[in-house]
Length: 617
Image (cartoon, rainbow, N blue to C red; front, side, top):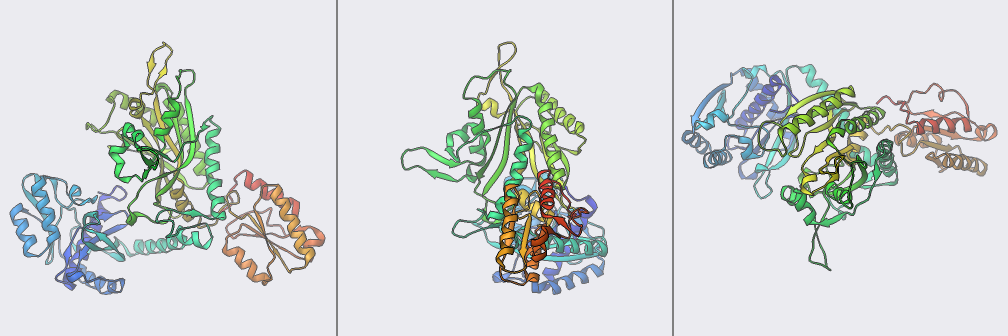
């Protein structure tokens, strides 16, 4: 089950997917069905029409009308079981070849988890039934489908729903298989909740970082460069670097040291670390024309950082050793999963690694959590964490005693920092427990952006050692951390969170001066202000184009510039200005009718340097 919704809502949306399938079956009797799971944002069903016929969103009204007819019948959801042979008879009789394939796989592989068969998070077969050779079905009205449940009592309990979009989807997520159509929908127990969802969806559409990235001239993609490889414009680079510099500054305060590593490496490094066996098919391979070495573009930084640590003997007196590097890694993500900055192939990480003794874990986690609290408070996003622990299986390395001690250290550190948290068993990495940063944006959406992870495995794999107080060799613990995670993904969230109305400290353009005409004295005065601003480290531009004042003001508004000042004869003679303040900024001082230009620049400089946010996102 999806973790982000409760069982009642899950059941409603699961049932809504069945009603969607039933409606499609009534309208297109020859239709074939794939899977129809619940997801965080509603539900979907994968379908294939006879002869590859394609639906469009123009078909949604008649599909929704048919769904309403089915709902009005108020048919109950009835569960029953069939043994494997009868389940196969059913799928063949109904010409449901995709269901036949799944049942055959279930029989052949003896799998009790449907999710393993179709690469979906939602299972269709009840594991207890399949262990006994039976498959669970559900029926509502004339429609029957393989399903493990749960469902609501009857179709009439669906009070509000809407079909959202169509997309392509390869059967079982494999591009070698047939391409199906995926119909997405959403449902709620009340019309009011659906209406609120539609409102928030429209707000999200207006804040879409891809849309704003174009409108605000922040980043671009090019077919000549390749999918998932964003390039940042001068304006976007300002935003990006301001965020990165802040993240680095927070950790430099705790004596992290910057290091630098190359972007390629021999694959041997990742064979030792274990990443080659686990992620080998996600790596970009590089061929040398000079040597026989098999090289790869680095997909992560931690193995390189172990080599810096291992470059000389270490003593307990040196520990903790803290490395910091903001650098780009590369992963060969599937093209169908790429989307704006949210999922890219060139991933910049504000990465850091701490090497320390076991008894220093808590104090090091305290430092990293303090950094995270300050950063997310500054960017205006509420922060909570998820503590990811091991379960009782044998899928983890290291002793259970060490795990229990480490998990308690993580929990204590989170409690000491007064952070809201949840605990999840079975979500740890195989090499150690972790803290996942969960942030909530201005639209109430939750995002997992970064982690702090304890690692007992790589120090052993790379034979990292230090000499302890007794003169004996000991293996350090490695703490992986990134405050932002993927810079690109963080920016996708942050741009949408702010709606592109960035606070002064990271706004690509902080002040725009608009000349009332092209008179030389006025332009020279504006340029002199620009020079003062530059010397103060401010980002100020001068618009002296021969456009109307109203048009130039409108252009500044569209670019969401925090402060705009019109420069004319009056300003030239008095050196006083009346700043136009962006609508979301609340500033009683700058809202005065007039300010001396030097006073104005000083106030803006202070606002930027102190990273003050006056925005109401």
